[in-house]
Every structure is written in C-alpha cells, then in structure tokens.
Amino acid sequence: MQIDEFSKKQGEILKFAYSDSENLICDGAVRSGKTVVMTLAFALWAMSKFDRTNFAICGKTVSNAERNILRPFEQIEGLPFTLKYKVSTRMLTIKCGKKQNYFYFFGGKDESSYALIQGITLAGVLFDEVALMPQSFVDQAIARTLSFKNAKIWFNCNPEGPNHWFYKDWLTNPKKPKTHIHFLMRDNPILGDEEINRAETLYTGVFYERYILGRWVAAEGIVFPEFAGNPEKYMISADKLPKKFNWVKAGYDLGGNKSAYALSAFAQGADGKIYGIRSKKIQAVDLRPQDVDNKAKEFITGVEKDFNVYVEKCFIDDSYYTIINSLNDWRYMFNNAACIKNNMPLADRPLLLSKLMASGKFFLVKGECDDLADELSNAVFDKKSDKAIILDDGSMQIDTLDSMWYALADDWLYLNRAVMI
Image (tube, rainbow, N blue to C red; front, top):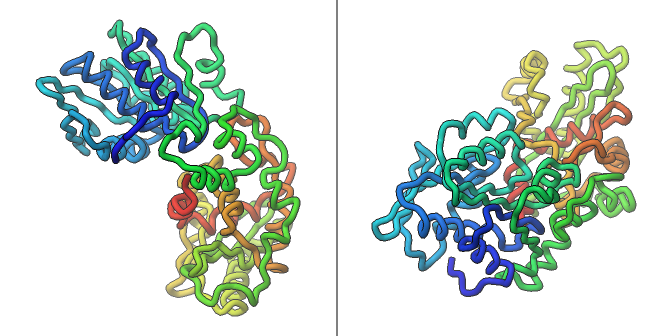
C-alpha cells in the first residue's frame, strides 16, 4: 500500500505526534482514513522519541488489532522500519537504525480484560475502536503510562450513544485535555464518490447517523424502519427462489413458559443472497417436553419436503445441551448444533441485518414467514442501552427474530465480510 497524499485532517494526526498534546481522539465515520494514518503516526512518534521501550496496541480482541492495525501497517510501502511480529507473545518489534521498540497487542473485550495489561510499563497506548472496550480496561492501560512524563494516548472509534462512558468521560469532558479530530469519509483521500455513495446506501436510521455522519446519537424507535414501512419490498414468492442453494440451515429458539418457541429456516442462494424460507412461532403454554422434539421434527421435515432442500444444521441456544442431545436422537446424521451466541454480539445483529437489507441481499418467502415479518416490523431499540440493541424485556416477543439469528450463526463472519465497509 502506497500513501501518496494526506488529507488535512490526516495531517493533523501527524502534527499531534510532534506536539506537546498528550491525548488524541479521532472519531467519526467508517472508512474515513483515521486508523492507518494514526498507526503510522504512532510508530513514527515512538521510534523518534524512544529506544528499547514498551508500547501497547489495543483492539476489542487481539485478532481485531492484528487485522485493523498490524496487517495494514505491514503493507505500507517506503517505511524506514524493519518489522517482526511474534505470534506467541503478541509482540511487534520495530527497528529503525540502531533503535528498536516493542509493541504489545492486547484485547479489551470485557470487564475481565483489564487484568491482561497489568504489570507492564508503557510509554504510549493506541486504542483501536475504543468505544467497544470497557472503561476498566482502558483506565488500566492508561495507568501503565504514568511513569513516562512524555507519554501519549491515542484513541480512535466510530460513535456509539451519547451516554457511552467514553463520550462522557473523554470526548465531552473539559477536564481532560485532548486533541479531537472528527472524520468523515470525505477526509479519506483514497475514496472516490462511487465508494462513498455505495457506503452511504448500506446504512439507514441510527446506523447512518453514527457510521456515515459520525454522530454520537441514541438508538431509539423502530429498529428496521425501511422494512416496517414497506415489507413487500423484502418478500419473494416461493417459485422465485433460486434453483440452487449454497446452504440451508435452521434456528430454534426455546422460549420457556413465559415466552414462545420459534423456528426459522434460512438459505443462501447461489446468487449470494439470504432467503428466509419459513418461520414459525409456537406459544409455550402447556407445551410438553416431548412436544419440543416433535415441533422441530415437523418443521424441519416440512421445510425439506415443501422446498426440496436438505437442512444441514439446526442451531439451538447453547445453554440447552440436554434438548440438543435429545433432538439428535431422532434422526441419524442430522446435526443439531449449539449456537454460540457470543459469536454474534447483540449490537452486531441489527447492524448486519440492516446492511443485508440495504444491499438487496435479504428476502423472506411470502406467506411462509409472517411471524418473523411481524417481529421485524415491530422490534424497537432498547433506549436504556448505549448500544444499538433490540429491546428484550418481555414487553414484546422477539423469539422468531432469535431463531433467525441462530439460523445465520454458522455463517456470521462470512456475512459480515460480504457487506463490510
């Protein structure tokens, strides 16, 4: 990757590296060019000011930091550095002339992560997507720099809600001095009008506000307003389904006595689009244990018969291993699998589905997914949460939605990459 020019705001990042300011915050839109230049400036600053010194590069996970920071940095052409990354220690050694410094990679995914960074002394920290990290981890990492009078802290992120701890504790806190640079996609010199216009079409509602306009706004109201306003746009008749599918999988949400049981079957066509071919909700009142098995058998065999497909897997909430084992007894070679819900965080679910809808890659078979369509039309954001998650307090049923997430769980990473911006 060759960097031929810097935008004005990217230039401000480079200026920070040689200023007296201690803290830099770059927030705003996706694909706005803040991360690569911040990484470059961070390395230039560290190598010009220090020798044989430790630094930290933090992402939500180590893998995220490697993908977002390390890989693009390694691809920059013309740097005066020698880079050596050791996977076993998660340490990047950068050499320049007779100098060398050490950059440790950390993941700050939950409240327990702060313990990972204890005990190390650092001259600087780069936080990539800091809004996805808990405050305890960030505070602990910053505390590791207190031994250095000339330490610098570098933050970048896309916006979350206005009640987010980082927005209140750092971005709008006048007691914490910082250099704040707000980025939009127009601030990235490598993006043309075509790329920007495509990105803008993939986001709607609160996601457009946050990821295109770069605003720290609350997630309120209907989650999928475009679907709610025109559900017919996302419907397809059964005879218009692709003749060939890449996969067909089901999801089964076991709601318990106070909720409902729900099943959904989804498929990816050879055209790459996602099709909900059938969904069904079963109220849980007086539902006997054996009925749980029978409903799954009836649903899956019915889908296979009516659509002439083979359901590869049925994903079930990973806390119901007894029921999973029971279901596996009834059909040889049928794979009822535990759905590891941590692989698809709550905040990622509506964002992914919104992008699939906006990109014309999500459809439901008309007349076969009425329960799911109803829940998609009526789901609302949890306004008590900083994250854009769906309200799930029992005031409305979202069991069919849950069964849909489970059906898509096995292909979650692939689907995210397919609509990545």
